[in-house]
Image (cartoon, rainbow, N blue to C red):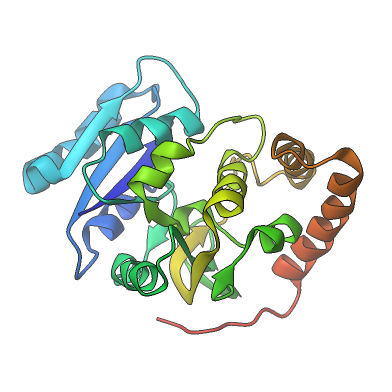
Length: 257
């Protein structure tokens, strides 16, 4: 079984699309764990979740935090409740293409890696697809993501025991990036599936949407990862140039689905 963990906080506009894309995965057994991080309109989200509980039974788990804990602790809570050998993360405004989890499971087993990421296609807030595809290398290394983080959280699948060993923390930084750095540094290279199985929504309001704020958070993440200030400054410059190429340059489209 693969446990899909979806944290949400007042993110109900696209939640059904995320849930449907998780349950529509073929070739694998899936459970979905929705962690409601104290959404203000409790009745609305519980009404939205009701048909999933009726249709999927024990394969759908709804957890509600009494107080807003943040996305890192919410994901960690989902990992703790997971029953699968593997866990996969999906944000409440993103969508998966069918076949994503099966392709990642095959890649992880073939390469004996603990973490797998896929390429992603950017979609507009209304869900319409753009021609912007951000690829991933076949081999994802610690040194590589120090210069440019190619791993999107909603594309990640990893062993549950690894997620338990390296819980996410520091919401004031890039909590997911910090987690990937620690895993790749200590557990070896990850594997990339260069097919855009993830549809990444360019919706407003995410903490990474503000580029100046995101830049400060990136530097903070490097320092939390144990990178000294001089090298962190150099890596920050590399990150800035990579970001410009990623979102404004001509991207390699790789495989399509």
